[in-house]
Length: 170
Image (cartoon, rainbow, N blue to C red; front, side, top):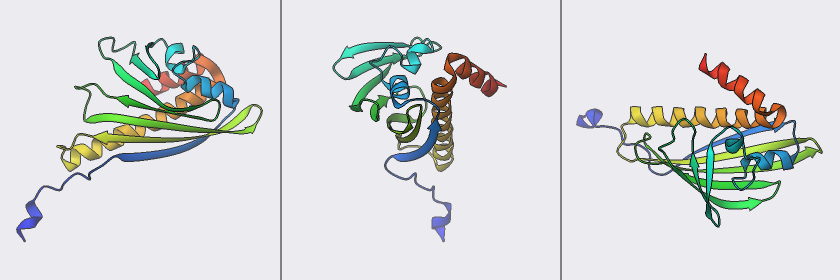
């Protein structure tokens, strides 16, 4: 009976999100948007900085947060078909510790592809269930937005991404 008032524990281990989308762009074009080593990377084109650290490591600095450095490590890179990386989240940016993002890109025809995204995120363990639910919802929304922005970028360029961002701000 007294167990009713105990604080529920947050599930241990990572949280996983999967999404899939068709994109009116070639696998090569979409892959370039993901690849941190490519000058056509979406983050670079949007004005953020990617600093190569050598090998498969990069530092991402978002234009709107110039004091925060997000370490990125490529996990697997298969040109035009698979790209995965880990992003460690700096302290002070919520309860998310890191994400592992993985993209599988399959051609449908020469100028169309199917993109499957999987994001695994790990959260700090001291969260309440309410905080955990909020953090999971925020990560889920962020994943959906990121994939939609990549689709817009691949299909319509920077103008399409800017239009999407304006819609989000309203």
